[in-house]
Image (cartoon, rainbow, N blue to C red):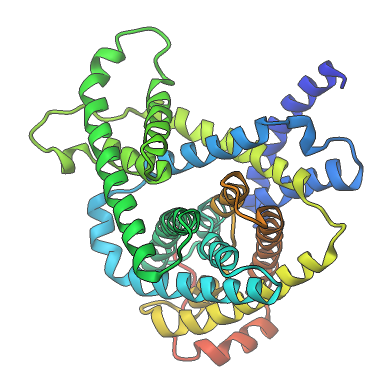
Length: 407
């Protein structure tokens, strides 16, 4: 391996990622989709790089991305805003998640997966991608209330994916998938991991003023999240939920402990965390593309079929659960169900946990992520066309027509 060339390509990749982010704002083509295709081109198609080049770093990247993404997601959640918007969001979010989970589970069973593998597959792909949905909501100028619902849906379903996936994996490792046992394990993991994360967040805020007096301390908060993630996993709890709660505690100190006079994260720290997420997202989706294998086209065809049913079901779910939206916003809400970073990261966990069939499960999830992002891009691009409006009016005729919201 030519090391100077590798270093050169790392720099090129970073600037390419920023260019793709700008391209997304102007063309609606998701940057993560292009990154996946760059990985596919450099790996399976041209053979320039292979996942084997990364060795065990691939698993480290997967877990690190999971921890940092969830931590930063927690920082973006405002408890007061969530409380106000939770009721209108809950219907669309919960119904869509469990319908999607059911469709994916049925598809995986039809492929020959075991019940445990099929349920885990459904849990992983049940949510929507914050990395794709949030920038699209901004670029598409969706009205405020619907935009809030879609953003919250992407955040909440990330949590559902994590909690339910780890709960199912824990139940599978114990040799039972009894619904009551799974729910108890999920509830216990959620409660104890949340308590650990919240306590860790309050404790860290109490130390933060003194920590800031040292040199080169910008990364210490992320390092604390890593410590918390590892400690939670060693205790048999969900590290993902713990760091999510840690981030929520850091972002909502005045709500959680109003009389404690705790410091708040400053803009420099938040920008640094956002930059870290950007870097991890860039390298992870490139790695995902490198990891794609097209020798078995049957997996890709199954993924396409599963995604087609998921998007068809989403039309009905949106019609039944979304209120107060214009016809255009309802169409876009039905289209914005891509799978992304959370699903792709979680896809590697079953194999790491020793679940039989974990490798095939990972390839199926990767394929679902790829197909769903492609389909979302196509549907969003065609949203304003006459044929698309006529087709979707079958579902959304009850919604009023409305002009685009003003800036």
